Image 1 (tube, rainbow, N blue to C red):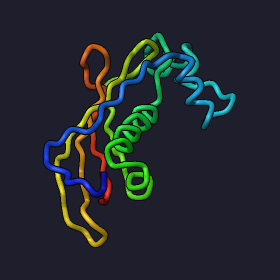
Image 2: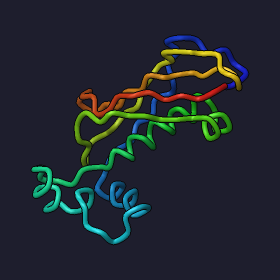
Image 3: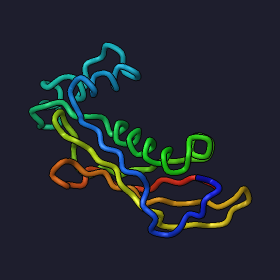
Length: 139
């Protein structure tokens, strides 16, 4: 992708992921080993947050956004210069399907090339925004 011209408002590839309690547990097992938390224990989610079900970590949405940006910029570019910054708007839970979309919102010449900024949007199956933010990479 680095050799191609990137234009303002150009869309990035969307990524959709079905969220299951199994996928939440698997994701959490990479960082929180054998510890009960709001992501794997319904009682703790209810006690601490008032939700009747465990919630997916926001880091899952960050991973999905990074996957979309990696597809857009290419792994060599994104893995070396890419960033993702999301603001979480609503919880994600077992049964949700999260879709990441976005478009190029800004370009700026920098010492090592062109810094491209992408506006990112995460939505659930009901088209409710669950997160918004930006991703960047230098091409």
